[in-house]
Each structure stands twice: as structure tokens, then as C-alpha cells.
Length: 401
Ligand code: GLY
Image (cartoon, rainbow, N blue to C red; front, side, top):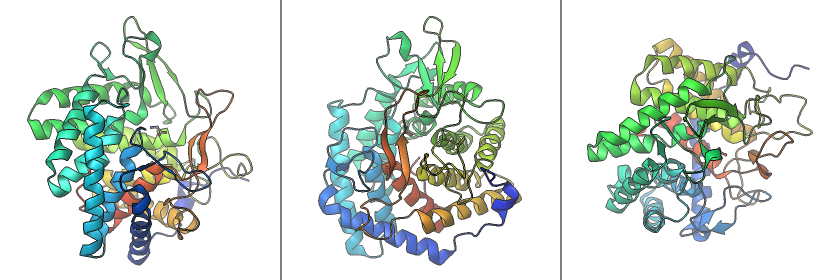
């Protein structure tokens, strides 16, 4: 059996239609509504346990995705009463994010964009909330403290002065839009300059010759010059961690939007092509793209990667020539069809998440992460599934990123 289907085969797959995407979104909005009593001022953990999230405090790098779901529910709600409920919850959560950045609670990492873009930039764009504006600008300032000017990149994790921490990771491409937004709001170019330097350094090293991507890039602690690529959450250093590849797809689309640099179009095509050539027949990627059909018994999927890729395809289609744009839009509709049909939660009694079969991190003898959220809902998978549907329903959606 072939592990992966061909692009010609993908082209024959069904696409989501308007009715299906609207029904899927109505289900998502209902899931958010049913979650509100437990998660109005509490936040779901990064991943579910047996498909159910438990409430906790605003502490992890992932808390912003739930608030992002609340704002997407606000935008897609069917009536004014529901909109009011979602806004009330969203506003309370924004206050929690302002408090978090004021007291600097677990913000010594690069994930400030993942935290503050779907929660607070969104709130500011949708409601003009000054509290959200203040929180997101403070988060952008905090992200600036992670910049290493010698190597021209934002350091992902850990204390800034420790040699083993000289590292950037592909995921950070989604943290960068917060800096562009800060320049737009304040008129100060320093945020944008750091953003552009970081994107450029990332692009220089992250895409490999075969169009797969490194998860992380290590720099020499003395010189901050490129040292080597390494994985944390992929199967092994040289394999292609599925979510990393899709952070690459969406990240290059946003990088192109913000920089207009023609070479990023090419990176987008390359990383997208690699992803598409490593899909199993139900179109939902395994957690590492080295796995495919026949590996089901031992290897879980990462459904979140499918949703992230679809968002990237839809974003980039805004900037591509018509025929190519239609090609990526059709791919996004095929991914959406597959996710809705086989992975969307259709009943609150099955799960309080949105998308089943995500994988946060799977331990192997060759990577450095611990097992967590294997074959579970993951909160960013839920968020990007809703973002994908929003993009399909409203092609001119004003993106949060
Ligand atoms: N940014 C961490 C992850 O995608 O798991």
C-alpha cells in the first residue's frame, strides 16, 4: 500500500459546500456556548484528556486560542443575545490577559503572538477595546525582549543568557504578526524591523532542500551564526513534524502579506507541495509527515495541522494569480470537507472540543519532548478549525493575525 496519495488523487476529492460549512460553524458556535459556564473566566488546558478539556488558569502558551474561539463565535453567532454572551465572556478574558502581562505571569518565551493575537488583537479589531489594545501592545514589548540582534532572530525559549537557548523555531512565524500590528498601532517602526529580520533569518535556514522544514534552528552561542537544525516535537531531527510544516505554510503566507517579498511566494509553494505529497488517503496528516497509510496502529494523526494548512492556503490565495489562487482555495475546501466529515466534534457528549485526533507532542527515542495530548483535542486545532470555517464563509474576513 502507498503511504501517501498523489496530488492528482487529491484533485479528485470532494470539497465542502456552503451548507456544510455553515452547519459546521453553527456546531462550533454551539460548542463554545455550551463551554461558557465552565470557561468564562477559566481557560481550557492545551489539550483534552479523553477528549474533554478541564478548566485552569491563564498560564500556558495556549490560553489565547480559547479566547480566539470566543471571538470567532461572537463573529459567527446567529442572534444578538448570543453575541452579547460571547462579548461579555471575551471582555472578561481580555482583562485576564491584561493582568497576565502586567504581572508578567509566564511570558518569558516567544509565544506572545499565539497568546495575544487571537485574544486581544482580535478584541481590539472587533470592539475597539482599549484594555485589549493595552494588553497586546505590552505583549509586543515583551516579545521584543526576546530579540537577539547579533543573529537577527527572536529566541524561542528559556533565559536569554544561556548558551543552549540560542534557538529559533518555525512556530514563531505566527508570533510575528503581533509586531506588525504594534507598528501599525503606534507608528513605531522598531517592531516591524525586528519582525522582518526574524522572518528573513527564519526563511534563510528553515526550509530544507527537499522542501520539508526544520522544527528548530540552533545558533552558535558565541557568534549567533547558524549552527544546525534540530527537532523537539518531530519524530527525529531530519523528519518533517507535521505541525511545523503547516506553521511554515501559514507563516510564509503571512510573511508574504507583510513583506511582499517575492521569494516567500516560492517558499510557500515549496512547503505546501511537500505537505500535500505526504497526506494519507483521508487527507488528515499524521503527526509527523514521515508516517502515512498503514501506520494507523501505532501513529496518531494531528488534525490541527490540516486546519492550519487550510488557513494558510486561504490566506495566500489572496495574493496569488487567479488560477493558482483557485487551486489553493480548492485544496482548502477539500481539507475542510475531510476534517468536518471525520474529525469534527458533532455532539457535546463526545467532547467539549471542536476537532478530534490532534497531537500536541509524542515522545520518540530521537526527540526531546515528553508525551502530551497524544490523539486528543488540542486547543489551537479547535481555534484554527473555526478560523478555517470563518475564512470559507467570509472570504473578506478581517484576520486577527
Ligand atoms: N507551538 C507549539 C506547538 O505547535 O506545539
